[in-house]
Length: 336
Ligand code: KG4
Ligand code: ZN
Image (cartoon, rainbow, N blue to C red; front, side):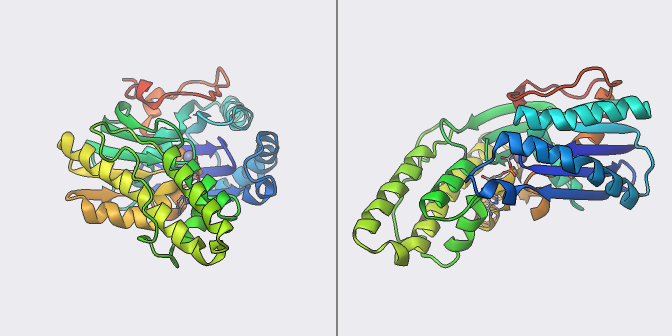
């Protein structure tokens, strides 16, 4: 079966074709980063308009690359995300479903991230612990199977990607800050500042990043006053990154061992962070899986993959679904 996947929940347009026999056939991604950078964050109206502009030409070229005229099903991101941006992908998916006479599959964006490692040559088997880390989410989930999710912990305040972005902004780095901060951190000393490892000593699996972010902002203010900011920027970035990664890895390893899970899947944009990938591998005794770097951040391939796993849920185009909020642990296994 051939599944077309459309992603348009935020500031990336993604289109991909996945074949359940042959794997990923083609994919394309367009990032809107340049459009939003001048505003220091994503502007929803601009995001929706750019998805409108990009989706059709990308669709044509991906179908061409895949050598496919018409897929067997169209999967699209139905939420969570920016509602106007979601409506573009959802409207297109349902229109295509009607025109082609093929069923559509509404996909949960975070389930897409969760199954992204299954696009790789050595895919994880169920059950596993998932550490989902993106710009909007920080979650530890015990995954028994597709749609069988138990939320073990999440952030009480900022998502970890948001903490990276806000700290990067305070350091004078551009948007999106995560990758820029990680790059600057490579030149710094991660022992230079003793920033808090929020919640690490608490017995729950929840996270908190606002205290860490505030500690960094206070330190930056002090350094600026002392005229030492420029020479210490990389040390701040490295110390912040180390503290954030320690919190994530510490909790993830504890959660996996609490459930006797021998596999950890790391997914979502922050999963592209090199230190996080290395540390979790170093400190966890079991197997660690993550997607290739390009499929850590938003993309169409993960949506096509999730659609392929949820073919049992495919239904004729009927309603255009676009949910700004949608909890992952409320999902069910595929029908049938
Ligand atoms: O999954 P994603 O592309 O979009 C959401 O669904 O949110 O994640 C984007 C987030 C941003 O906060 C970005 O700064 C962060 O992932 N990110 C990183 C890195 N690459 C992307 N954070 C830390 N290190 C990175 N290398
Ligand atoms: Zn995402």
